[in-house]
Length: 314
Image 1 (tube, rainbow, N blue to C red):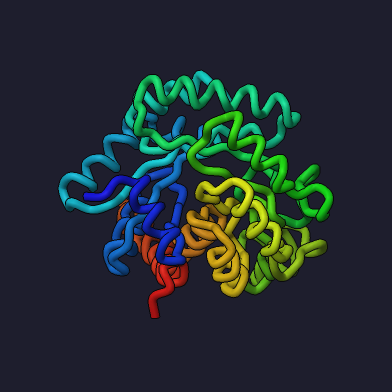
Image 2: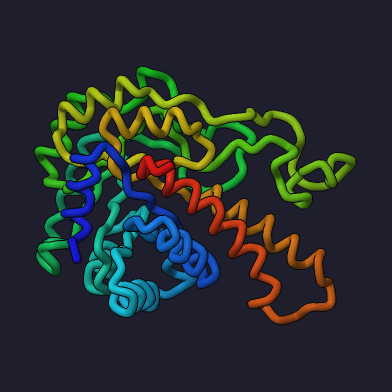
């Protein structure tokens, strides 16, 4: 089986992108894994610090390893949005295939300093682990948004500059780079697409989230910025905050140099939608695996469609 590094290189060569999907419990992993097998493409599972705390760091690593070995399937695990050097060390020792050290909110010089340390710590434990750095702040949570996250880089002057990206990569030694190119964490969701308890049509008369201030789609990606950064750094680029972006933006970003795309909020929304369906369908049911089945199915649909798009399969 090819390594994650080899698969990323193949994606670059073939003009496609690997899908990265976050989980916080087993039903989402079940849905993602089944969808990836249906499409027959490699897949990356992500767990943020909060998600790792809930699942267990070593437990998440053991789950992914067991699937990879039992099915001889290219499924990999990334320690998403890791904010401390201690957590980098923890993930590397647990056997994660990749680690994102997220210094995107730090001043530029401090980001370089801390990310370089993260690379050194992780590579000493496992020379094959891939280390990703983040340059530019794009928000910090996967949730339904009603406004642009405070401080997120959206204006052209705030996006990642190619010359900064080049210096960052050269001085830190990261394997992957996540730039700010108009992407944001979280997702703007039209009213009709939200579960009822999140301010959908059923909640329009009261309750739920405020009904004002929502945009119908995400801000557009700066594709030329992606292309310029790729030319400058010459390493694989990662697009975070992919939930809600248009198909055309995804395809253009892949063509410009994006090799991995992160999806999280979109999955959480699908899971919530499916769970509500399960509860409504049989309000007397108490077996979790039965109630969560519609949630698994909804997440599976999202992952299936995203993987087909990212891999340009029709």
